[in-house]
Amino acid sequence: MYVAVKGGEKAIDNAHAWLSELRRGDENVLELSVDQIREQLSLAVNRVMSEGSLFDPDLAALAIKQSRGDLIEAIFLIRAYRTTLPRFGYSAPINTDSMQCTRRISATFKDIPGGQILGPTFDYTHRLLDFKLAAEGNRTKAQSQKTEAKSTPHITEFLNKEGLIQTENDDGSDPPDLTREPLEIPANRAIRLQALSRSDEGFLLGLAYSTQRGYARNHAFVGELRIGICSVEMDIPELGFSIEIGEIEVTECETVNQFVGSKKEPPQFTRGYGLVFGQTERKAISMALVDRAMRWKELGEENKNAPAQDAEFVLYHCDNIQATGFLEHIKLPHYVDFQSEIELVRKLRKAADQNKKQEGK
Amino acid sequence: MQKKNWSRKEWLSILAKSDLDSLSTLWKKVQINAEYEFFRKPEIGTVMVRGRSGGTGNSFNLGEITVSRCSVGLQTGEQGYGYIQGRSTEGATIAALVDAFMQTSHKKLIEQKILKPLDAIHKRNKKDLASKAEATKVDFFTLARKS
Image 1 (cartoon, chains in turn red, cyan):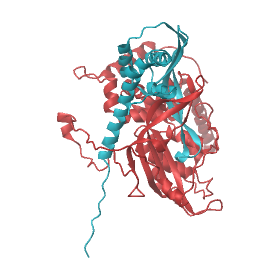
Image 2 (cartoon, chains in turn red, orange):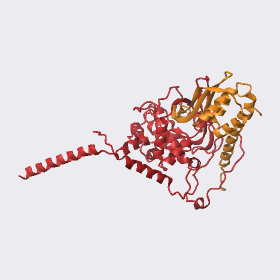
Image 3 (cartoon, chains in turn cyan, red):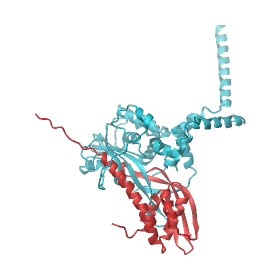
Image 4 (spheres, helix red, strand yellow):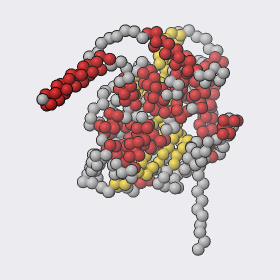
């Protein structure tokens, strides 16, 4: 039963004022600007954009500032803001083949056209705290090397030429949209990919890790991981043609998984796919692993009852805003509900007491 | 080398991808004063970006980007459409005005003073990124073992 209760307004106002003071912190320390967050905490910004499902670095940086660095709170702010905006339309699918890559690596082939580009990666750092960064700040400049524009075809295409990998074809169908229709199970791959791309990185990482440890039987190679800029093109109805309406940074991961074949499919490699806003490779790799695990049915694989194979379990629990909304609501007043619980327990105890007495007689 | 004819699709794309500071600075420099009215007032909204499963398969909805847009009409009748990535009603208005004036005798001026510089900034940024990426390209060498 829900009963409206009034009160606590002053306490709430004062709690918010304190929150605001703590957000600012010690006033002898310079205040952080939104620009500084956008430029210097860009991977946090990327995470908020990916899970907030809205690519806008300035907004994500503002949300991080407002949330005192609580990224799930920041993602919540972005999701809430997004709902206030009108939707102008849907873009054409971005062409990741023509991505301007800032990073592009393959764990399956050493020599690839265009080469292995490491990009601005933490890989190969020693994970030692850099005290110089605290003392003197960051002064290193990136190196440059002259280059010609060259194409960077997807690496899985090489396997495709021999017919060794399952092809991905477009049947021209219009994808369903999670932000417009509620999730229903069974969910097709388009819905699964949309849900995974905006899902919680930690949850997805844990699930992906579970597939590597044996909960769902697939051993994935990173066929290709690429990060870079893609332009976004959309049809403008009033003009009758499409224009590029923007550019986004995305991370794309294609995994290659061995597949011994089934009644439906011949022995070949199969793919898992990850595509995420921003430089977010841990999540993109996780997404590819979980996408592949959930494809067991269409490939005619055995259901191992592994968590990552269970699309219903994954899709209904991967969204951190849904999860946190339901989880955190239990700390809000439930006085009346709990009062009835107390009454019930008292009644049960009374009945139990009486039973004991009667047995004792 | 120099581009002679911009298609409308090209110039609208360059405007949409430009950053507000550069666009606004360049627009103020050309100092075209003209009367115009809004056909569609500047508004901020989103576009749902799509991707493809496996890069080539069925499309799916990836997530949204913010976009601002408006349309203007000049007194002389030309109509301009402005789209710009992000949340800027000012940017959308300038983009629409540039589009409208590209259909007038100001075309040459705008090409030289706005489109060309914006395109140059875009190309420079791309080149900068490409050369930094190139510097992180791995040169493999194999240590041949003498038997």
